View 1 (tube, rainbow, N blue to C red):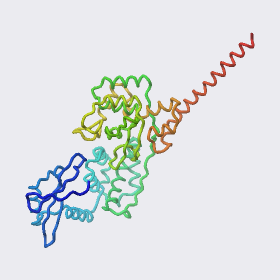
View 2 (cartoon, rainbow, N blue to C red; view 1 turned 90 degrees about the vertical axis):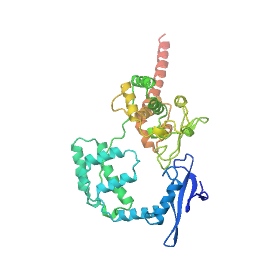
View 3 (cartoon, one colour; view 1 turned 90 degrees about the horizontal axis):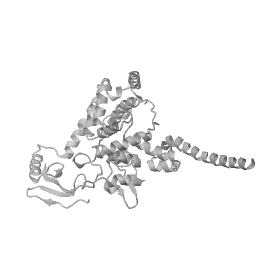
View 4 (cartoon, helix red, strand yellow; view 1 turned 180 degrees about the horizontal axis):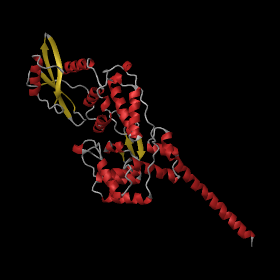
Length: 388
């Protein structure tokens, strides 16, 4: 939306412009103050109508404080903060606190805080340049000896690396001061989960009976379409192309949609279509809205409850596991090529789809046995005729 014209208020030196409301839902006013200080004309934004609960009266009070020098403009505040940050001596702890302050809405901060408190406590008072490769190696070995899984160790080391990288990226510390190298434990990411026919029937029965309908529908969609949990969290009604029969996964900067960050689309088969059509369409743009109508960020507890009701293995992952079930069933059918499977799973690389290659091979072997049966039958019939 292009900048709108100034609109005067009843208060001198206070005006507003109309702009799109934060979140894209409607229009709101953005208030500005105009005043002179030391003979210089200053114009500064003082707040948004909804986001900052700003009114013309409040804007006028702020203008008076700015005029008297009792308050800094937003630009002056940013410059003062930047100056203070640049002269501060940073430790791992203070960098972590600054990271949280700038990313307070980031998913996973609670888990990361627990990792920091439990495992990185010995590092918190050290400056980033004091973190050596030997210290990091000792931490990795200590965690390994204590029985921590490679994935857990990797997450802890990654958090420490992320904190240091944040300081460099934001100009709080110098890259030239950092010499530490991180040796990450190798992970076996080739784990492919599957369900037996009996387990699958038990799961479908549990979903049909559960009171957690939202989680149940999401699990069905993962099973019938192979969609990722994050893609379902971001799925909006406008992303469903009913006429052409596709689900559009729109990737953009806020992480919405396809994991690849690119625009992807997957076919809408009859089973997935049935799930989507069973969901009541309300005024909310999301198919699976979270609290307050916003984007859903977590549904693990409800999904785990359904998993328990179905009697599935404890280590089975409700969404990612069902995505694997979807891919495994397609591969083992023998009717879908590895290229087609890669496209259906929206894998960026063929290597990611190779974990299902053995299932495809098994299907081809079964198909080849048809020739054995056919030849055996012909040979048997020939021998019978010859013996007469």
